[in-house]
Image (cartoon, rainbow, N blue to C red; front, side, top):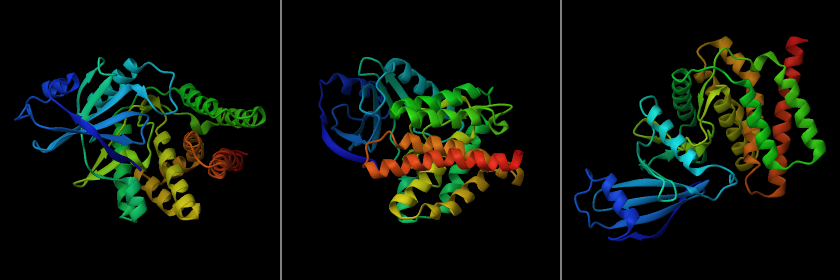
Length: 323
């Protein structure tokens, strides 16, 4: 769960402060006002909230040249520009923190509005209307997917899966098993699509906030074009099952919530059942993404068991259907 820590203040004469003042000039009544700085963790990069207490608002800066996660080998300028352009494109489709500016000179900073809301993760912890929250997220995801249609690149879907496997550094026999399973999925007709779309790419419970009956979508750095729409659904489903297994002691408790979420996303019954047949592939990817995080060995072992079981069970159901 994201936490903030006060790390200081920006004082007059600071170059970054001046840039903030220039960007926010219309909202600033007092250019000598105090600016409090809070660091937000966990995050893949350095992320700070800048509070203007006398002005009544905050902004957030994400510094792409300061990676603190597993991802190190990337071009920060390209990543910065990609997310900014994505945010500008999507701000008229879904509710997101409004993109304000970028600046390569300050460790590749992306500046956005700050939105204070309740995350899906907190709703899961509190049992706070989870069915309704999942209904709202399904609607937002459906809007994103339907309004960003493009050609579909199945090869990119599998390339992403293999990159995550590469990052986990599996032993050769385990990797060979995954390669075999992915080969079977590659030739499955279920993963073929007439068109693709943009997906969030990091659809985890911390990236969906609820505020004033709106769903605010955060952190689109991992968004992908030409993708399979079930990518996002599989990640949410994996997160739900993981949460109930680890924090409630029974992953099966997630099944009614997952079923409700998929039903609310679907336009009709045939689409619902088509989604459920493909879902295990992307749930497996969701579990493998979690396994990249630092965690206890027994926790990681559980996640890896779930990941491979999703691939195997999904193939078993296909063999039954297609003979």
